[in-house]
Length: 280
Image 1 (spheres, rainbow, N blue to C red):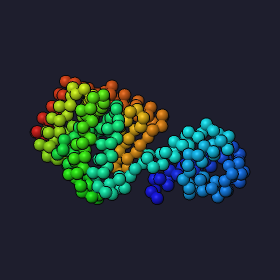
Image 2 (spheres, rainbow, N blue to C red):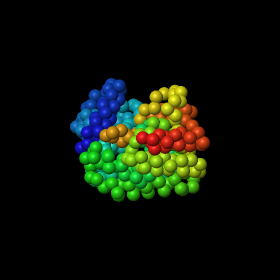
Image 3 (cartoon, rainbow, N blue to C red):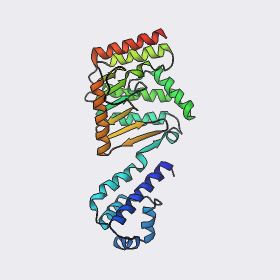
Image 4 (cartoon, helix red, strand yellow):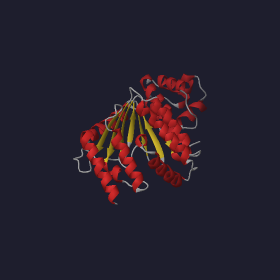
């Protein structure tokens, strides 16, 4: 069993134990109310058994807190989806992960994203993507299926040409200057960004290095249909869908958007970065 899954199950169990204690009910009495064996109550609240949604609803009612059922169910749904370690995801290579993203992007209508250190995969050229994927295979010591992974990443970009979709993406200017591959690779990547300006499905904003910032640019994140947020760290993909998390990341995106430039001004920043790359 994965460590993150077990930690999440233990956290859910701790919450169940807390609700029982707040109700002033011991394990024996709760088991009798639910018609369960005492051992099931013990296993659930100690994280040794995975609860079902029916279990959680029954528990909440039995401790006089039916309003907590939705929170408990949300915790259960998040056990496997909230944290997905790259080590496990990449066990079969990068291509399967990229294929999953193709499906996720196809079913997404509106997306807001921010990247601080890299050009987003949605906008990458094949050469730029190839360098990044090869580097990541080396870092993670995962199967090196770079060509297949690049092809899948390019398939993801087909959504940019689907009417009715909207991708509102912010990039910190530093990402334009981070050298990935050769000068020719970077020049081609920056030209690709210029070509996206003005597309009906893309709103591209660049956050200038010298812009007054309401907050410091931290990690990248993506908001899918205002329903969930995905954050990628070096070793883990995190997913959040609570109202509080969505509101927090939405505020961060809005503040970064206020500092960003678009249209001709964004074009000039990209051209400046291209000049800097050519001069290196």
